[in-house]
Length: 427
Ligand code: RAT
Ligand code: ZN
Image (tube, rainbow, N blue to C red; front, side, top):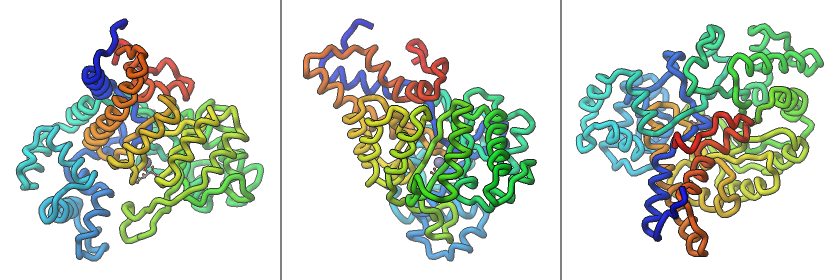
């Protein structure tokens, strides 16, 4: 552009405007393309029954868990609204986020009458709503979480409908292969793969064939798994064998990254179902060992415990095949996002992926990206201000390039798909 971004407050304003306006690639969500029909969630009751809100509700509610689960979705939503929005002030990240979504979609948030909000919401056309949300959140591309073991989802892929909408990309999720091998070994033969629980050459070859075929069917951008905090690598165990003998060879052949989301302890309170998972400290040594052993393999990594974040960012300075991403789940709150984004910028400049949304319901894109943009904008404004203080000319074009990197281009280049990168004229 040739123009500098201007004096201090003008510079701050430019940074925040660019961060607000730059389209984003949301590289990990649980959203689905329209072709997946019933798997799509977009109603107000879907937003209210989000598991983040269920967990918060149960702090107040006296209902036995099973009684809560036996309610219809509508009944659960009413209970959640009553506990979190009527009986108490909605000041947590997830409750405040829902209000932000309602406000941005034009509902009168001064009213506490759920029925009024519902009827306004239900009158919207689902397809138009999705477009409105993607537009309001400025999400250009998003990555789903795709599971061939899920019967409803598999049908859509088998019918060749899964990638009809080019904005919705696939990620092949492999949790059962690593975390519940007996169940995976029972399921794979049903899908046509000659697998047995015993770790034989045939089984390994068949699991590799399964992954290869499904990567192809989905055009999967990466292979993904979530791991408990006590994940150890290398070890004399099933996980290490699966990674070394199946996952890495398949990823290498397909030329795709392996995404590890580490530090979840599933079901610490099973009564809460999806809301019952806990965060857990992890050993970054496992990621270090993988990155060192497989320098040609790319790893996308996020961790769930706050205690791991600094070390993980330092590790990314050591390995260029490691891309750290997002403020995951319980870290997707203002204080954690601010802290993490600051030291990531301080340690890595702009060579990381600051956020993913993890959305399960479309409307959530509005608040999750709204909040993230606000925080990232603040951190970057401080950084550019300091930079300008050294006498460096901070050009608007430089800021736009950096934000495009953070919001998508680092991801696409890491994947080896630079053609998907956001161009200057699109931003
Ligand atoms: O953030 C979430 O909604 C979690 O329930 C998990 O799905 C987590 O993000 C994951 O992908 O395992
Ligand atoms: Zn997730």
